Length: 119
Image (cartoon, rainbow, N blue to C red; front, top):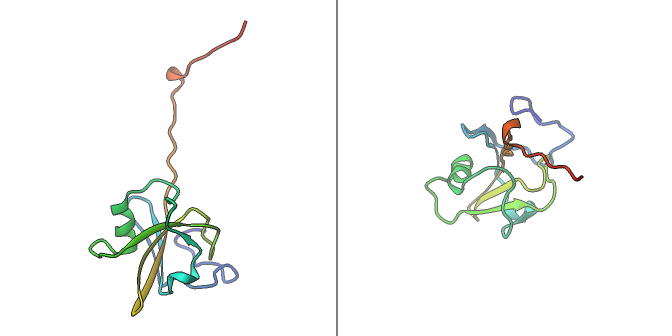
């Protein structure tokens, strides 16, 4: 799913209000739904490369209090399990952001690899 393409009509059960891409590469999908509709685990850490501050910024809650961060327990609405779930779940204004975090890859140059052989 490309950030600049609309979500496929057959995929989501809920259409996001807004989709943003942060300078850190996090893709944030904002939904005006109660948290109970999202399979979230608030004892789990999201997959990928992120900081708490980056997740709050992506969700638009940088200055908010009462924010909870967890991860999707299973795929939901086109998002993979392990994506961050950031919520400010006030009854008067339920809001959930699903934040897809980039995965970090560490490359090892050929000179720093070690060779071993069994003789």
